[in-house]
Image (tube, rainbow, N blue to C red; front, side):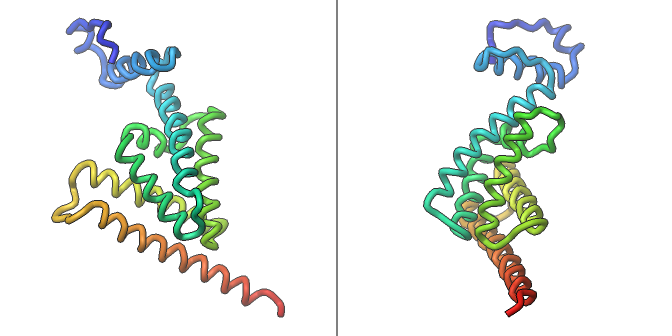
Length: 190
């Protein structure tokens, strides 16, 4: 936070929370990026793009040397780890695109394409891949939010629980991939 800026109490009480958050976050962004950003949409765009870039590097690294189900497990784990380490950035990137910003769209597409390429290695394509991508994002986001809030009752280990959840997800993806391969085989002339 930029501690040099002083606020007067009347100013603070007359401003909306959105305005106060925007000013506070804008001062942080300006300090680190030297760009002035004053609105919530500008900040959301900045944080989403940053998350996409950071997460893409991490997912590529997590995927290295792995294929198919092993790559999918590794990507899911890294998504969760990022969500736990950077919950605000994760939340910014988890929102629906709200702008025609080319950088935001490109970052989103690149991240989705990486995950869909892993799903393709598992035999899942087209609409099934889109659905599996949404399921993975929902699974990771929901699990991370519950972990951050401590809202799971009687959990022995978040890590072990997440591993079981990922195994169920991977088994479902494998099943969809196997069904798709069987359908193609059935329609292919011999």
